[in-house]
Image 1 (cartoon, rainbow, N blue to C red):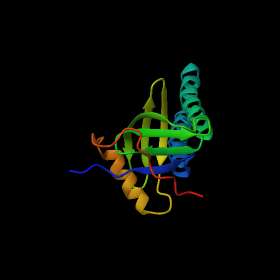
Image 2 (spheres, rainbow, N blue to C red; image 1 turned 180 degrees about the vertical axis):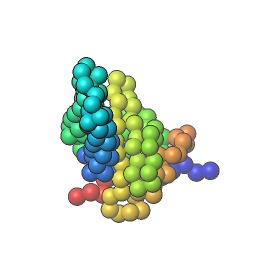
Image 3 (cartoon, helix red, strand yellow; image 1 turned 135 degrees about the vertical axis):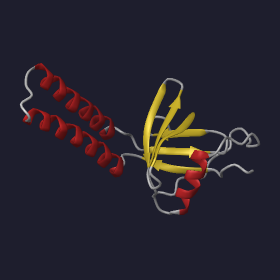
Image 4 (tube, rainbow, N blue to C red; image 1 turned 30 degrees about the vertical axis):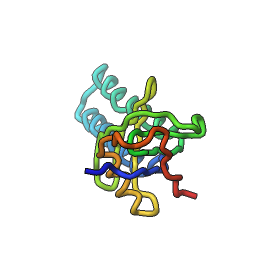
Length: 154
């Protein structure tokens, strides 16, 4: 069986990812407000409010601070390149959530971990290649230092 072809994909702040995080945060806040409406009071209500507000604020902050860059697969390894590290950092990629048109993945390198919401970007054929790469195993026959194709975004 052949491995997935080399592919690079632009990564940045995802509108869909922001909507999902916002929806989950709104649900937690609504549940807390409904509980408060049923006459809950005191320290338990304050604790529930903190559990609703703090994770939502942290998730929103993390989403807002996402740096744009390029995630690339060369057939043997994943590389993340951004303005801060233009040469790219090698790491591993694992799928956390697959919604077919949106993927939540975790990229890990030595001392660094990032979460990316991946979604199709023109041209659509690259999305299929990216999905293949995400689920493929590394090909041992890929020469060391192989370069992924350049990103197709302007």
